[in-house]
Image (tube, rainbow, N blue to C red):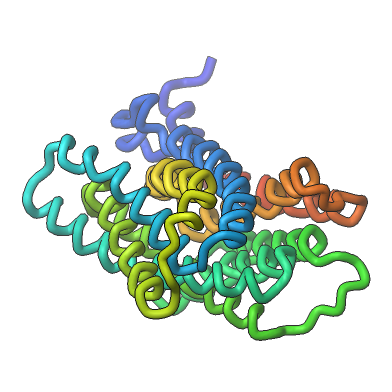
Length: 318
């Protein structure tokens, strides 16, 4: 039988840290919980593409962003009042939510405008450019991601290309594509903001204020560039309800919960799997093709995501 000190030396944790860890606090358990929650979140988001596409037949992009984010904020605001917190936590949550919400609002409006000017496939591909942008932005602020994350991000981007861009399609950059690229930059910033604030502020206040601030961005565009129509609002009610409640209030809260337990680079890689689910829903509900090319892209993305989650091999102690 091995002696106690030999068993302790083989542990992946230092002796002092190992004694303090409980099963609930185990870092891999919390990390895996974050991964599962974020993957469920991407399924909800992928269905929102159908809601967004349907709503655009009835209302403008600014109106849609205003309605969906305002509904999300209203759904979450009661929880902010019900959950007790200090004045400092409340103030920090409101401030962080307002800053993140402005970025989210502009990203959402620009994405909606871009989707109207380009194909859904190109929009999906260009949006997930944030999986490359986040590691780059991380380097700027002193966060150096693991080498394998770079490899997995590029591999996932190749997978998205096979899923979103159809064979024989001439890949050019038009005005709509430019909007989507700008939207991707803003989403990269928003994801990093969420990763920063969720570890420091009251989540309920942060999330509700984020959506209300985002809705203000949509409202300003709605007032200056679009016209209100009660008939159009009624026609787009169900897509707005899904985007506001499920894709907004529920999914974004799940994102915040998951990002507390994950690095920004891994979180963005997991979120890029939205392209896989979107391709499946397009095939099931919209009659879009899902052939060998798209299936190959799904396999590439799955390999990238699974490999990114595998823990690094630890060096043996001398």
